[in-house]
Length: 387
Ligand SMILES: Cc1cc2nc3c(=O)[nH]c(=O)nc-3n(C[C@H](O)[C@H](O)[C@H](O)COP(=O)(O)OP(=O)(O)OC[C@H]3O[C@@H](n4cnc5c(N)ncnc54)[C@H](O)[C@@H]3O)c2cc1C
Image (cartoon, rainbow, N blue to C red; front, side, top):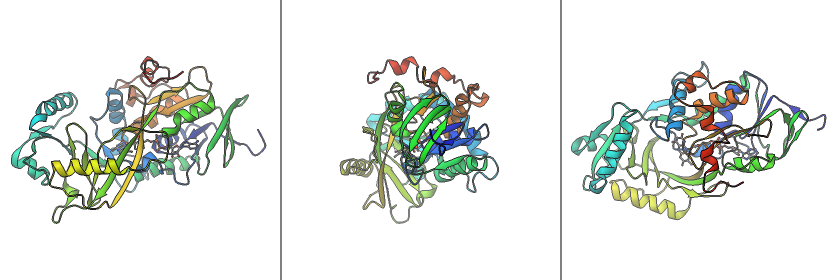
């Protein structure tokens, strides 16, 4: 360690939505430095999402985190954001004749936790989404609860709020190595050396790589590529008032996006951690599925991209200290839910990283620290868990 080493109480690696939300809630309890490799903190998965809040999406732990964070999204602190974080959108899950059993199963599952669901057919289906092809789609399940999220406002609200409380964002700070010394972790980056008793690993698809640098056991994280693109609506159709539409098999979806449609084949192709790019085949598959099931015609892509949704075997995020490795804290495995769970995950991670109990907003949703802990049995049992 040299005289130029910069000290903090908490170093957070990765300034995507996970790191930023943790930093926001932690900054009132100690000094925080948020280290980001890229010039822009939203460059990777956070800046590539579909920006949906679907309260019923994900397993029980994810749904608990969704619910725990919703009050924050609806009523963030004064000055957090000029724009609302959530705006009503609604969603329509659609089925062809041979998919009606699958739609019934989705309805039965959602009905346990969701109110306001409506089975729609015929003219009502077309009124909700005029580009449905009635020759193909016979029934839909409308959920009025789903919302659009303003990802940029949320992400920068967290970062600005952290700065207001004295925290620092350091970009172009690629963490290349770390060691544990007498005073805590010493973390080497392009932007200098930093030290803190607690390091929080919020490195998205790279979380297992950061774990390896620290000498932690891998959590078996698998980044999975998902492709998306935007395209123009047909003449006379205003997408903005329409719900998101997803096929009941979840093998494609479209959602309104700033006057256009966003489409995706809902792909989940395992990938190395990397700057993901869309593959022509995935784009072609999405176009084919969307054009087969609807009267939409993609024509040309207005924009196209891919991002990595990173999962562990049980699809629940990993939040907690690595057993036997003092001061090394995981905040990884946000999967396809890292935007909508961010407030719930932020309050959870900020509490657990300072050794506090799970906040009441989260505990009251039935979640316990053991459900998220890195040493939990469901991770150790995973087929691809490696020692
Ligand atoms: C197409 C698509 C659609 C999606 N739709 C939704 C949706 O509708 N709703 C939803 O909730 N979620 C959605 N998601 C998932 C969501 O985007 C992610 O769960 C979330 O963005 C993950 O955030 P993160 O902070 O963990 O990762 P990231 O945003 O990837 O941030 C991790 C950061 O760590 C940094 N980093 C890595 N290694 C280092 C290092 N060595 N040193 C310093 N920094 C490092 C990276 O540069 C990166 O900025 C979607 C994802 C995709 C791809």
